[in-house]
Structures are given as C-alpha cells and as structure tokens.
Length: 219
Image (cartoon, rainbow, N blue to C red):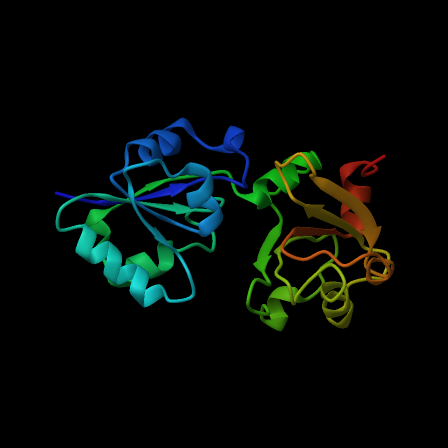
C-alpha cells in the first residue's frame, strides 16, 4: 500500500536531519514541502508540490499521487510539533501515514543554552496568541516560544509583562538556528523592545528564581 511519509527535516541545515529522513527524501518519487525545502532537497525526476496557503490543493495533490506512488512530505523541525501533520491526519487515515521525527528549532535552542527543557512550557505565537492561562507567570518558570513576523522579540515581551512576568526575566533570542549566521542574544523582558526586532525565531524566557534554583544560571 502506498503511504504518506512525513519527514522532519530539522531546523534547516542538513547536518541536523536524521539519516532516515534524508534517505526517504532522496528516494521519493513524489515530494511535497515548502519552497525553500524543495529548492534545497528535491532532485531531478521527482514530482513536486510546494506547500502554500492553499492547503486544500496540497491535500488533493497528495490524494491523487497516492494512487500510483507513496508521497514524502517534508516539514520543518519535528512533524509532531506544529506542522502539516495535523492537516494530514484530518484528511487521511493514520494507517497510511508514517512519521520520521526531526530535531525542532525549539530543541536546538534549549541545547544551545545547555538548558534542560523537561519543566518548560512550550508555546506557539506562530499565527496565534496563546490563551492567558498558558501565558501566566509562575515562579521559577521557563517558557519556550515559537514566533512569527507579528509576534516577535519586540512585541512578545509586552504580552508576557501584561501576564505578570517580572521585567528582569531573562530572554534569549535564538535566530537562524543551525545556519552559519545563527545568532543567540541575551536580554531581559524590559530591555528587549529597545533591541532590533527579530521574528520567526525561538524565544526562551527564564525566570530569575529558576536560575537561583539551578545554581546560578548563565555566566
């Protein structure tokens, strides 16, 4: 039976992609993904479809292609974390979906800070604003956030401050992770709006009380 193989391609650089995903992409007859991913990984002879805002058209392309071939769908980061996998599950039976996990930019951001993330709250500001109860300050909290071009390093601090986060909360702006121009900047919620605006990145907010509990925080 033909299947949909959802391959996580990681945060961007091929070094951070699992070999299983790279092999599936290389061997695919039909390949679906964002334009940047297709330009980076598609090879001559593959049938391709770029993922755009017209998700219905993408689903129809996949449905028609499945009649003759399996389809590999490339998604950024990990398929289980805010990806096209949700839409695929709504349109197709999970019996025909196989997922190859990937390294998310969120995971890489925490790794760059040498910061465990098992107690962190992970939120997405990508095209949405999380509910107030998920944004509410709790002593010792760590918050990992996906951002977009509207909710950015300049606008999100105000949202957190309005939800009770202290102004001295450390904020790490993690941009272009895995690329040569990767940038990680440390600031605070109070100071971040004065810095150049960064969107489509990972923000990590760390309460000072958490740092005290961990034994001193970052040097």
